[in-house]
Amino acid sequence: MLLSLVLFLFAIDLLVASLQSLGADVVQMVIEATSNPFTALFIGLLITALIQSSSTTTSVVVALVASGSLSISAAIPIIMGANVGTTITSTIVSLGFINKKKEFRRAVTAGTYHCFFNLLTVVILFPLEYYYQFLSGLSEYIAGYFFSQGNAEGASTGGGHWSLFGPVSSWLVGAINNAFILVVMSLVMLFGSILFFRKFISDLLEASSPENFSRFFFKNHLKSFGWGLLTTAAIRSSTITTSVVVPIVAKKIASIRQAAPFIMGANVGTTITAFIAAILNTNSQSAISIAMAHFLFNLIGVILFFPIPALQEIPLKLSERLGRLTLRFRLAGFVFILLTFFFIPFSLIYFNQDSIRTSTITYAFEDGSGKKTYTMKTRTNTRNGNGEWVVYEGSNTTSPAFIFPISTKNNSLFVGNELYLFTKPGFCWDGEDQSGHYEACIENIRTNLKINGTVFDSVYVCLFRYAQPLSDTSAQRIFLSRERQLILKREVLNPGDSVIASFEIMAIQDN
Image (cartoon, rainbow, N blue to C red; front, side, top):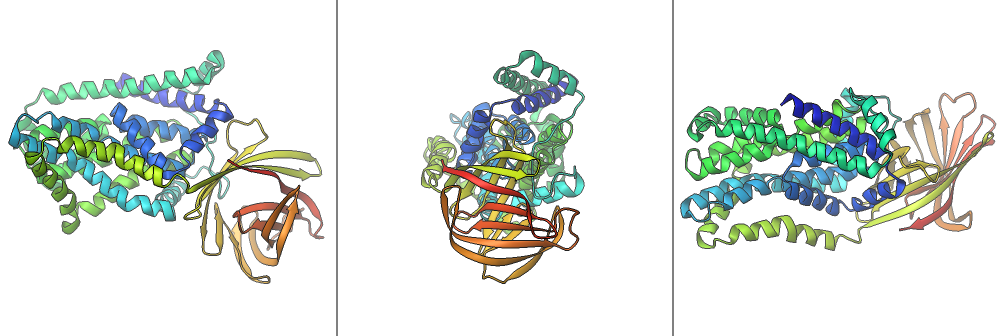
């Protein structure tokens, strides 16, 4: 068990290090693959259903976020999908009772309860995240409050990482010098460590009789929930604990109502894997944020469906009705798997394939010391105005320098913690950024503005003046595109209002 834990920690550390050395094309492929939240949801669901381990999926997601290859908002749908995908195991286990009529009904009820519980949680939380960044905002706030690492305000990057295995990982990256081989090695070790741990615990559970297991774990609802949480946290696999419940319910050793709190507890307990991967293997606040989001997703599901009687009945009734349906139609369980894990996700992807706009933008920064080039990849949901800006320093940089979450509400544009308003000239508002407190005012609105050969319509010119100006900076003039929801140009002004530095768009290409 200790060996599997050490192997797990080393695999995560090597995975973060190898992902950071991947080329920019691979990083861009990951960003584009997860640009549509529905696609990201299905990716998490399908991968977890295939490997039957949400722990592996969430650990890889933590490593991707820690390396800067994936933003928090893009990672959360994958985490949600992984929570649904892991339930396929208990559903498949229940189908093993198909030749025993009454046991089959109870087995399907127990096997699909976990699926319905997570599906309902996704149905509630996915729209909140999709439209309002509920989970990403809450998890970043909590992670920033308890695990602040001093990242730039409004920015989220992978940053460096540290662990006991840092020198070994760095040596391997330099010695092998092939990021693809290193990623494969780390994934094999990661999956192997979890499988080894799972096999060891499975043998321990099989050594005791189901009757003893039932009396010990399902005595009352609170005890059942607590043991589900603790045992799953200890073995780092909800697949085992929820699958063990299926034959116990099928043979009437325990009822589904006794087992339901245990399954909920298992759902929360499985989040320990992401926390181990994030806290022990990286100092990235982003990685801790995605681990927190995984925990909050499962915890909110429990808060909704455990203490509230009316809501508590919903997943129970759905699973019981599906169980009764299998008495009439034995293939109902197989149809449920096809619909839940394949047909519905593919349909959601198809109907939302045109909702995401991605662009590649080149910026030039110029001051007295010279000129630098930045590349920014933007992802914007055209239906709700949310997305992210991924900024790379230079044209060949593999790791993002910053990842800014963006959102639009009415006439407001939020970029990280910064606020921009699209309103009438002369309107002012107060705010604060990394340079201090400021007063921002709309100077004018240009019907069209040509910058480096590209013409932009409805450009808002905003002047930001700081209450306590720095020695060489007293204000910034920012040019905003209302149509593109984009910063086109930023001028840094000295106390005499002369431009001492500029950051402006050079080229824009819609992908």
